[in-house]
Image (cartoon, rainbow, N blue to C red; front, top):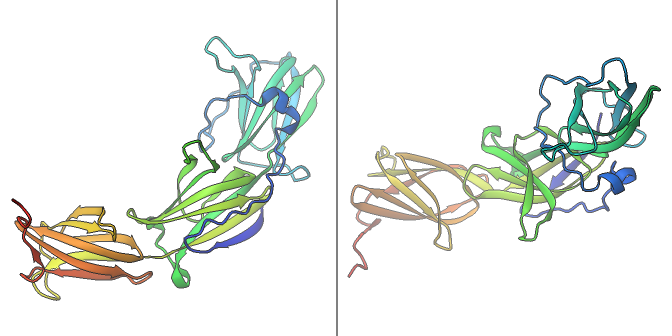
Length: 321
């Protein structure tokens, strides 16, 4: 279905593949449906359909959709919804018929309708007119696919369960924020999107290992984009001597170079993923507080011991009046 396009995105840089946006499937109808607001679409098509309200008295309409203007018909994964063009008493467009799969055939009463086809997160809407004569209508989705992945320096694979992506609109809003389109995308999952530029956030772990990139999706193509994280997995433990057993019931706080707390935990072992850089680790056990400065090197996973000694202890009353 898709032609493959591979992108390797450099670390810590947002790469904007900023060709001019391709004409959308809305062009011919934009004067009519430009401001159309449809009910929300779920991420996946539910395994059921709703038939036409017309039974035997209407005209037959065959609906098909393509990724590009001269592309082949999409054979599966489509969700079709047919609406009356005038809002009902609740202000919403009445749903007349729906179906899922590939090419769909509807029997509808003569008149005007709005047809919406969704393919994953890609979609297009078209106004059609139904008569007694059978006809065929095509919708061009102007859509492609996006497959995301991430690695560490040297191409080292990141455990998939510790890696997630979020896809946002490419253009920032008035407050500088991007509107979220698809959250919690797993690595190597194909997301179908309308052609355009998207802002992608890759998160490794749950602290501060975050990469942001702008990625261009092209119609009829599968864009495979890989980002590189500069981070490492570390496990903190408080011990009485080097190589000793971890002390239970220890409270942890990790500070960045600016002195801001970015991670807190209570555990004998405190595993976490941190971006490359310098940190201060503070461990509290009972009434004693211990501190250690550490440096995280990209791709270098390690166990960090904080030794509970007088040399590393901090007086909690120091500086108090």
